[in-house]
Image (cartoon, rainbow, N blue to C red; front, top):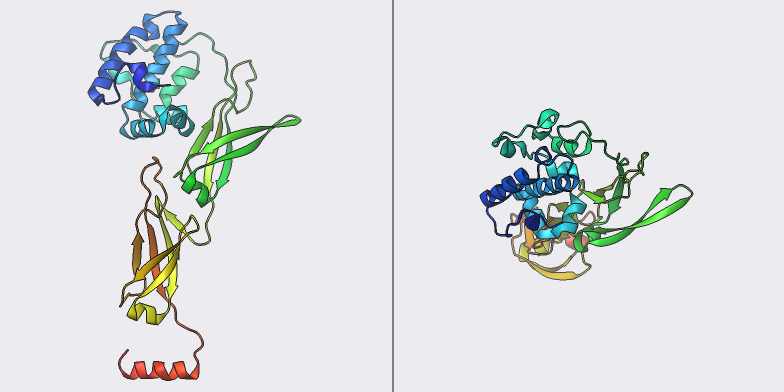
Amino acid sequence: MDYYKLLGVEKTASPEEIKKAYRKLALKHHPDRNKGNKEAEEQFKKISEAYAVLSDKEKRQQFDTVGSAGFQQRYSQEDIFRNADLGDILREFGINFGGGRAAFRSAGGGFEEMFRQPGAGSFRQQQQVKGNDLSLELPITLNEVLTGAEKTISLGRGSAAEKVSVKIPAGIESGKKLRISGKGSPSPMGGPPGDLYLLIRVEPHPTFSRDGSHLSMDLQIPYSSAVFGAEVDVPTLEGKQLKVKVPSGCQPQAKLRLRKHGLPDSLGGARGDLLVKILVAVPKVLSDEQKTQVEKLKESGL
């Protein structure tokens, strides 16, 4: 679904142009002005969804970045209409919402309920009941966050299991949901099935920790390397070894920043950085010669 085409605006359209386009189309297709016209009702739903996305800066940026398919996978209907107060626009023209007036309030996706529930304003006609949505947790690795992945999950369907393929976008974070349309529970009344929501859980990595699109790791170096400086090997998430210079006089807990060796951001943009925290290794056991040398360093004030 191309939200720009639905509203008849260019991708460069300003917020005011988008609002103006929605206002015009909503007045044309609103069910109160098209009694019993199913096509108008469906069009009204679509343009309202388009405006809910394009009028929100963050959602619009996501849509522009990942496209329609990727956006629909990441955002549920509740997410799309959350904080969207479409009624303010139409109330300017005195349209009567009847029992559906409260559904236009901005709290938590109430607008979506007007589209689903009978008995709201012009939408009193009986509608097919959609099946329940299902939620599953989907664990993924940090490497899959780096590159994106395609995973196959098994859904129990009576005596047989259905295999469903799902694309994991690069840069996704724990707690995000992916939606697979029509893979929820079947409707008990002949309506469409519900949707499947996959809750992403990124598993811990033995070497790297994550902070948004940045990665961090600890690297131990000998005391002499901290004093004199050294060239050390630093692993990356891809499995490479980078040659990195530690400056002389490097202090414990100092961080070296390796640019663009982190993760892609959630919008699929540039990669973050790898932050290497320097830990100075203190040996637990010293030879007699090493003890003598350390004693001399101690006497010299080091």
